[in-house]
Amino acid sequence: MGKIVSFATQKGGSGKSTLTLVLATSLAVDYNLKIAVLDCDYQQSIVKTRLHMDAENLEQLKESDPDASYPYDIFPMAMTKIFDFIDDPENSNKYDLIILDLPGRADANEIFDALTACDVVFVPLVSDYLDRASTADFMGILHSIKAVADKEGIDFSYYGLSTKRTNRREDKEMDEYIEQIGLSRLNSSLGLRAAYSRPSTLFSLQNPAFLRYAGGDKAVSDEIKSLCEEIIQKLDLPVTDLTTIKDATAE
Image (cartoon, rainbow, N blue to C red):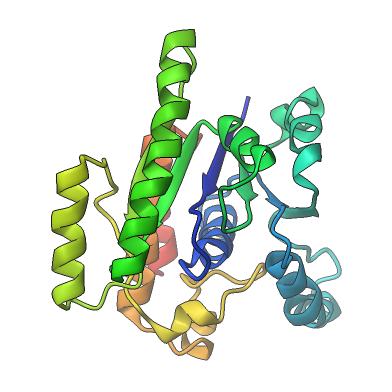
């Protein structure tokens, strides 16, 4: 059965949909994982990215390769339909990883319920003061879910994921704050880089040609690779040899 995760927080602008796009594409393209993204956000930004940015590129690819296709599946979905999807054995057996893109809020029962469907929730950590306060509130929600999950013997974890890092005083304050509240977080992080504003559901930012188009450099590729591989290890996803994949993506 595949793992279910979300990059979630209760504050908009934290980069959760961008994280979903960047990582889903890389995990599918560079690590050959079978991915489904459930776009439950009211803005439907992931669905729109595929329809308005990537559809034309796919048609161009098909001119030289008729079998070209998107590397993973995206489903626009109401949150009330999430459990119907993940409880369907055909879906749970088809995908290695199902990613829920949820609205940037946590004031509705349906969002709380969606979070309980996850094996792991990754919380984007932005160093702005208001984001830190919002993160603390969201941690309370996740802590209550984990307390119930632990009591019932259900696996549930959550980790902070530092984003938009700029090596400034705010980043240091965020680091100190996260240590203070005792939040486990990933070692990998993403900086505040222009390339992340041009995510694709078709091309990975580990692809040198698309990386150049997006205005990125090796630091971008290295960040994504490090984050993908840490997530693969945390979730025990079925990638058998990361060393072989590293060599292939470096060519």
